[in-house]
Length: 163
Image (cartoon, rainbow, N blue to C red):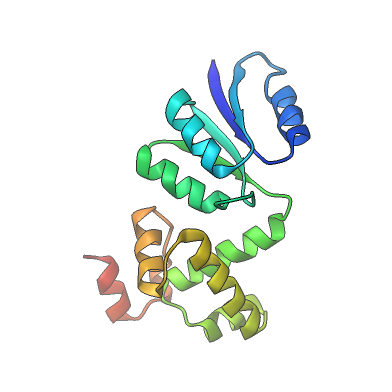
């Protein structure tokens, strides 16, 4: 039996997810929470096999929640979903490009979006991950196993990732 913790603010979403997950009988939703802070406490007290969480909730965002969970248990399994899937995907694309050492201008060219959009997303990413510098963002990416495309790095940047 796979045990699941559901975390999302609207109760109706949690009820629907629980119904869907428990249909086959091999998954049991053992707890629910309405925000990231409560979800973290519930994760610690219930130790589920999997956490299913929304990326945007009251309080800490889903990415911050995931970071806290992985600090607590680096082998935890967290499934993040979002009603704003394209926005989340865009943020993750920018996160990966920045982690590769790309400039904001490079990101805007690669993704065919404005420089202002990239800058706004960079600010949101740093806030969500609770980092203040690009170096800290890159460090977090490497520490959490985000795939870095070494072909796009200069030889100096590439040598940093080989340390």
